[in-house]
Length: 287
Image (cartoon, rainbow, N blue to C red):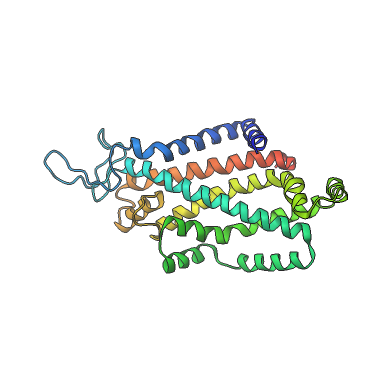
């Protein structure tokens, strides 16, 4: 695993876009960890001027670098606090998605036959679920905690990973090293997880990067639609508050920071995945 991660970072670091993207992702990770500790204010705290008047929709200033909201909340502080749920939800969803997708793909692709048919029909059923509407229905029925969001997103995100891994495993199971393992008496579990799995891990990492980008966008979309955890400040919920207050155009400093943050982080994660995908699949270098 250490070698795999080292190869991953070395491969991404080779390209200029990969280097820039890795730096951006690293900065966002630092903000997610330390942002709440360096934020000048609590995300829900209301700020007042010297006369005791609420600072409603104050533009950027020395005391409030990104301005304030309609309720006098510091936007920079909200932005720093919002990095944590974005990466927490995105990261855990991506990990869970790949774990489920890889295992289903391994079993389905290796055994084939009836097992493959059953697992792929189950996958097809999940492929038929509408992505965002399904998540919203789950949240409306079960509650809007971060864990519920992660579970709901994972349910509808593992399906494509499973199909990609299955196709790769179906090719690998015919390779000589698998036949040699069978001759030595290795069990199916040993062949799956010691012989085949290491060869599909680069592809799994690519899918994890793309799943992370997609999960971050989805988490922001859920927040913008008003279905995120009301006790957690997220980038999507910041935009939702501006929209609900009808201040999307009157207070651009309220909407633009979280929107730009989402765009930069998602783009960086995507380019990290793309840079590594070019190593896994060299044919993409000419595209």
